[in-house]
Length: 374
Ligand code: ATP
Image (tube, rainbow, N blue to C red):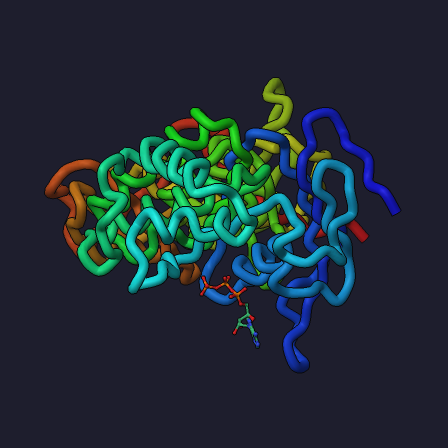
C-alpha cells in the first residue's frame, strides 16, 4: 500500500503497536510529521518513546501498523535503506577513531573518495562549530563536544529525518540549555525534520514546533507548546506539562445568566465560575478541571466573606523556595491538595492559615474530563 502525502507531510505513523514478551508497549501510535518540523515526543520513562523512534529507524519491527516516509511505505525496509538517522543518548562514538573518522565512517562504507569524505567532514564540523577538531579522539572531548560530533556524524548522510533519542540527557543543566539552542539553530538552518525525545517538559516547550505527549504507549495530545500548555485535553497532559492542579467536582449551575459559556463548578471546598468551551452540561454532572499553579491566588478572607464569596476554602500545609520560585501547598476542604507558585522569596501566609483559593479569569480553569450524560 502506498501512503499519500498530505501537503507538507513527510513522515507518518499509522496504528503502530508493539509488545515485548507479554507487555504491550505501544498501543496504536498515529502521528503525522511535516517536512522541516521540530517535533518532540514527551513522556515519562518507560512510556514507549525510544521504541517509537527505533521503529521509525527500522531498528525494531512493529507488530502492527505502518511507517511512511514521503508517501512511501518503509515498514519493511532495512535501517540503512531508510532516509533517517538516529542520534543516541550515549553518542555511541568509536573511542579509538578520531573525530574525522567517526564522522566520515558511513561515507567510507559507501565507497566515497578520500577527498570527498574530507570535504564533507569539514562541512559537517563547521555546521556544529567544531572546525579544527578532526584529529582529536572522543576521549579528549567534553560532553558537549562529543554530542556535537554525534550530531555531525548523523548530518553527514543528509537524512530527511533526524531522530534524537534524549541527545542532551548526559549533559549538565547549563550545557544542556546551551545545546538546546544550538540544536534548534541547526535544525532551522538545515531545514531537516527533527524528531526528538525527552522527559524534560521545559526542554520540550522551549525547542519544539509541536509536542506529542505520550502516556503508556499512546499519544494523548499533539500540538504546539502553547496549545498543550494552555489547552490540555486530559488531566494527564495538564499535570505532566506544567504540573497543573487537578480538581474533581460537579456542575452546580450549567450556565450563568448573561455569561454564555460559563458554568459554576461545585467542590466540597466551595464553588467557582469556570469557562465551558465544550457542549452544555447538566447540573450534577461530574467534571475534572486543571488550573496552573501560577494562576491561583490565595488570600486570608474576612470572616464574613469566608461563607458568601466565590472561591474554595483551604488550609496552608507547606511552603518552600526553589529556583526563584515560592511554592505554597494547601489542602482543600474535602481533601484535595493544591500547589501555588509565585516569584519571590517569602509570603505572609503561614502553615495552618485558612485561605480562600481563587483565580482571576474563568478561562484559567480548563475542563480536562467530563462525565458523559447517560
Ligand atoms: P526512557 O525515557 O526511560 O528511555 P521510553 O519512554 O523511551 O523510556 P522505551 O525505551 O520505549 O521507553 O521502553 C518502553 C517499555 O518497553 C519499557 O518498559 C521497557 O522496559 C520495555 N522495553 C523496551 N525495549 C525492550 C526490549 N528489547 N525487550 C523487552 N522490553 C523492552
